Each structure stands twice: as structure tokens, then as C-alpha cells.
Image (tube, rainbow, N blue to C red):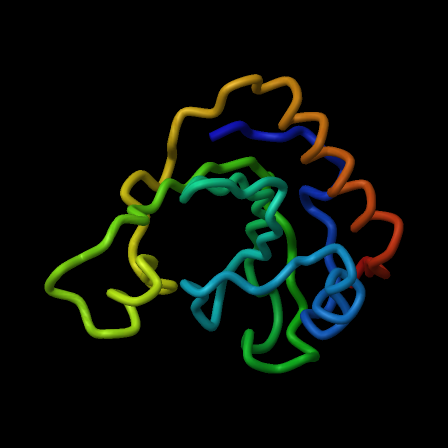
Length: 140
């Protein structure tokens, strides 16, 4: 994991606005969200079962996350690498056996080693700057 220093930390916006304005950069709500916290992810790089993401964690300040008007506040963003098993699983269902990849499988390594950290740190900061320039932030 590479923690990123950025102006995003501490900024507030509405969940719906973040969803709408960050979609063009590939950000989606991570699957392990709760009503009081979550994160937005986008893929920086993917190859052979390895994926490097920019992750923007946040807390819900007002409301509940499944509502567009939930006010969220960002925490420190970071880069993370997930490594998944892409070989055939002989005990899996036919779709997995046919594709060789389970879309919803747990990563083999949630925090894989990231080579060339400065390259990914720069790419992550550039992506965060895109968000900072596109999303309306609020003082509330």
C-alpha cells in the first residue's frame, strides 16, 4: 500500500455528486461499503490477475450511504495492489471452469508488493487531481 498525501483528505461532498462526477474517471463504490463508510476505487493498471487501484476511503458525516444526499468526508487516499488466482479451479461451477476467472473471488493478496512505487504514486496523485477538479466540494 502506498499512502498518498493530497488535498482530498478532509474534503466533503455529497455521495450522489461524487458518484456522478467521478464516473468518467472510472471510480466506482467499492463492494465492502457500510452505511457509515466506504471507498471509491478506480483501476490504474491490470494484467494477468494483478490490479493496481487508487482507493479513496470516506466516512459518512450526515445521512446513510445508500442515499444520494449522504454527506461524505474523505480520508487519506492510497494505492493498493490486488493479486487474484486466474488458473482453473476444478471444483468450481461451469462458468468459472470455462473462464478460468472468478469475478467475485477474494484476492490471493489484498496488499501485494508494488514495484516502481514512485510511478504509481504519481499516477494516483494525477487521478486524485482529476477528482479534485471535477467534483463539487462543500464546507457543511
